Image 1 (spheres, rainbow, N blue to C red):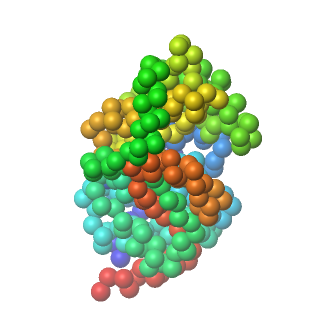
Image 2 (cartoon, rainbow, N blue to C red):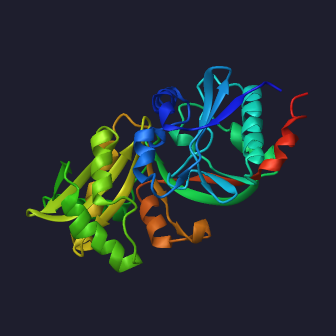
Image 3 (cartoon, one colour):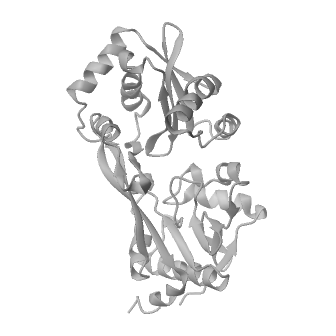
Length: 325
């Protein structure tokens, strides 16, 4: 077995971590410490850094709850982050080292939240394979609605009618740097009324993140005769445009404002990108699909991509010892 050293992340490794993330084959700005640490008060960080002698060869964005380490509960996706030149044989030993380190530190389970393939610069399915070898339990699957922007995707007739309604009404789309009107007047009231919940990001948090990642986080509002009627906040990576928040006022269906906005986001804002990720349309950890929301996404031409979640017992690290023959 190749000898790797595993260390817990500390603030002194801030620059090293971010430098590694910037060139990894399966990382986005969500793994940058400037992003991860906006909610550091909510999670016990247990991120790991894996070294081959003095060279950083992998990282695991993670947090700990009791005897379980998660990759990472505060992020949409995660997993073991690898360089572009990684080889399967090396990843086997990296995964072995991680499981062994966790097991020796009283962590019984590793919960892996796989990064969807559309966010990776190249193929990155090593951990799916190794989790299976280690008898990982596939505890959850998310069905994500994604438009392949390089395909001949088609928008349905009914969706076109809604888009055209917005055009006839001369709705105005503006990119905004001020999140406050959308957050306070539309998003927070709607989430409170419909789900008795709050946005994951507070107004202060999303504003601070926008300042740190101005090219990755963008916001667009739609106005009808000067009145804000809907908006959406986008997270943008190298290949993917993903709406993080979307909400409209009570006039949305009459105006077709959200459909009008999304037509613009897909055909104009997403130029040069490969995918438009609507995200999942489910409740109950993926066990129930909200039919009308899923239908709406598919009416724009979205298809289904699966995101896998695994639970691996760290004591199963020994199952990797005989993998290579």
